[in-house]
Length: 400
Image (cartoon, rainbow, N blue to C red; front, side, top):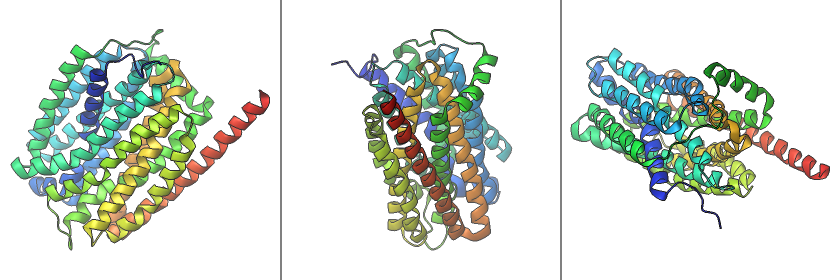
């Protein structure tokens, strides 16, 4: 029986932890918006824009930086990106003004795409038939990092203020980058392409790969729905009647840790061609989650239930789709992943902006209405994508 990866287990674990650090760093501010607004003397809407800035920067990095994984040596690239992300977190942690805080947020978001260099690298170094397993394992680390980030942010903020969160992260990311340089094997595309050709080919891939388009659209809509909640969670939980502290808001985010189980399961099921079941389940859970979240304005218990269902739904959709995309064209893994993740985080950016707009317009009820609408659109996209895949498989079977 072939091993699941040519990577040693410690190397895969290191990649998972690195992904968690990179991705989690973009979510700290979601649990700290109230404290950040008070520290810099800005309103909550202005502080909330930092969520959108982080995600827009991440999307730009995905579009312009991660495709270089099909040109440059991936280990060195991931190490350099993590060090630059550490610089961004240092700028935030030691910022003396709101402008510097926003600049650091932008830099950290832009270069934290190191995580999306490691994901296709894990697939590329997998034994045949186990790419989904590797991707699922690394994405499990990414998911745990995102979920723990809110609790860590709340806890460290209670101990030493919100800036301590970013100061600790800057040091941790620098150390992790040095560890990756020592432990990970080199990984290079067999035929490196010129940068201009790399970027140009991404548009071609989007035009010629219908499965890539469908999976990207479904995941983008799903993440947009979830980002409505992310962008407004701290605002509703810190307001009356709940009035939770930063640490308490962070603990609420732990409800979604079980989504990591779905991430690992989804990768394995993708290898076994059972992805349609998880996609349908994810779409249903995502839409259903908005009902307990609606009630969660006055009940922490209902809010926790909503977060749990939402994270399970999102990860079922995202990991299944990303594992599938990683296997569509092995010779273009970094570019396919870049197209997918650019659309994914573009959806997140739009969802964050819509969430803040809906909050300012109609409070938590407005945010829930927008989020549920986006979840319904995601479900429709998933349903159409599954139907298309089934027709394609039937046509291929008949032709054979």
